[in-house]
Length: 205
Image 1 (tube, rainbow, N blue to C red):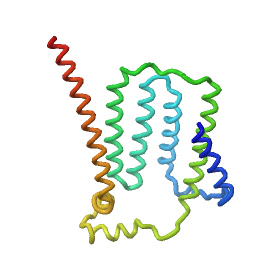
Image 2: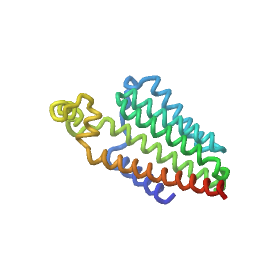
Image 3: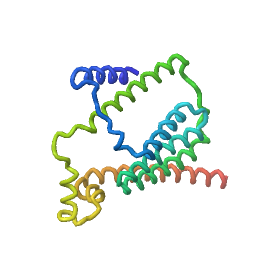
Image 4: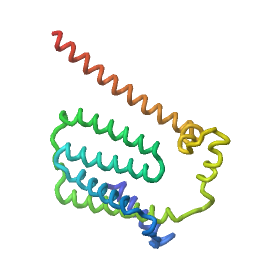
């Protein structure tokens, strides 16, 4: 609560002091289907926060994750969309294995505290939305995307710019992500192996 409160106060001060609250929104840039998808994702986020069962939470979070994949695909990033779908599917499946072992959802805070937290979270979300709308119209220099597209085939011999960026232009970053996924896979395999060995011992005894 303290961290988010300070963040909200600092953002309010920065926006008011330096650049004001003015920002432009061109409705012609938005596709009606994408707007509808974002509305559905927002509703799913509210449902996830208010849900009383883990199944409802999983369905709502899955809706948000797969919605993000559709947004990536619409904006010409099929690689990111496929990655998002795979990660979201894996997450939902893993949670389904764990959900039956978790205790029932409970309201651990009084209603007054929950209303305060909801107001604070909504304030932060609104401020972040304002910052994103302002940032989309800020351009300090020529976009680097044009240069990366020009270098994609001559420098890296690849016609898929996204793949070239991931594999060649930011190799160490991608290697770090692969290491994280590999470590997570090893952890899951170790947990699954422990459970299998424990079950086999119980059956043999």
